[in-house]
Image (cartoon, each protein chain N blue to C red):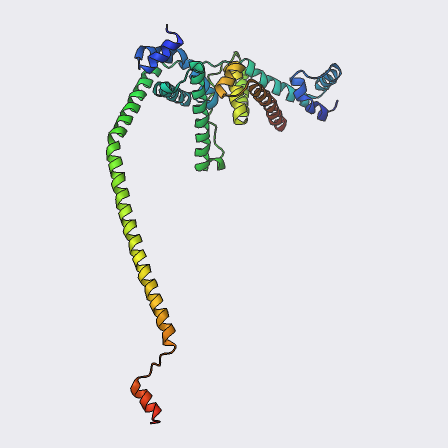
Length: 192
Length: 149
């Protein structure tokens, strides 16, 4: 076990054992976070790799103003958002918005407590709708909402990760919740 | 409460912001209207998924091994990039020098050409000015003309 300062110093000195310890400690949370933005396991793992590579290469730029985990989450959020934007741009460049494509969303990893097959299928469909609604939120609201509701990160930590004030984060999450409700009402109204 | 009012109050109902009277009217409408009831239940059930959301991603046992391999790759790429850097810098400077020479010589040429043109133009202007008074007929023609031949 290493404490925070030992980990920072260890990564600075490119100590492999400490870096391995650090990666194994945070790998699951970072992959989960990236997955909540990308909804694809392979993309999430690739992004998580990029995140740890960036930490390894740029640890000297870490000033220690915040916790190492906050910095790690910040890098992961930035990488995920860049990935989403890159994908959007790619879709525009490929004119794929002209064709109705199946979404590359794989939601098989969300735990479902349903034994009945038809209920499980219905839940999968609901998760897809929910993910689509969350994805269509404005960027800042999406980040704050995902970090709080899906990653269970406190408002205070989100404020540090997003480099915003606490009231700004509260407002973002409140607006995200309202927007999400509106989007779902609109969607289900259209299906009636 | 009619359907329109129920749908208007849907968000309030979801957030438990309805007062007792409105809540009673809302609930009694839902009991009698299958469309509003279906809509309310759908939205509520989907939103409830967020509270029970739990990810169960399979652990990738090779994650760290892949990470180390990627790190090695980036190191090698960086090294090869750094090893090519002096060549790249020299080539850039050489190219910039040649481009500079070409542009410089072009500028000098065009400057001297412009100067010669402007001098010629000036000379022509003077000539034109003086030519106004110069008779171009040869002296022989003038003599002949004067003698009325």
